[in-house]
Length: 273
Ligand SMILES: O=C(O)CCC(=O)C(=O)O
Image (tube, rainbow, N blue to C red; front, side):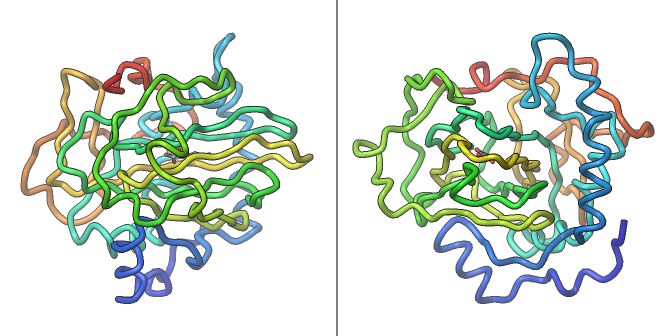
């Protein structure tokens, strides 16, 4: 995988300002070429074979701890350059999770704020959503409400949609207006960034095309996880120094594909419903 120069991924002052005002960033240079994405997609089935009966791709969570395949993506210098433009010199990553909607999947992601689910403080986290396919309005690409990260954390309610990936959500019309939502469109190998407080979600995929993305969560070293709620939390320092030492440190994996021997905390357990 090419991990050469990262200067092309340095955010401009204008991009940083846009992110801080709107809570997201699109239009970024690709992380992977199409040849590299072909290779990454060709390897994905090796992870899928590790799923147990009854599990689905959404259960591929925190497998970066035991898979160099995923750890290398999460530590890609081009991604780190983008994230560093938002979080500054000292940050770690702690989560990775596939969000895959197969063709004709009715699976949705209700409107939510990530930080409502996470037992972490303060709010200083960025999600990278790396596209494993071309993603748009036709195959259930993400939507986000610009500026919603500045409106505080709203109490989420139990989701009424039976096909929702998340169990808690916000209601369009009472908690916020979905009219202003921005549709994310990404080419395979590109990524978006979003703030942990931004309201976002996605609809079903009625198309003939798969819609796969890998979310990776990065946080400033000043962010502390509550181990009582998420006891398996591990921080993988990406850049700089951890001057706070608030969190247990993760050990880099050595095998190409593997799954951790713990069950990651589910959204229900982490959510404050
Ligand atoms: O992939 C999606 O549709 C939603 C992803 C999401 O909710 C997230 O990245 O927090």
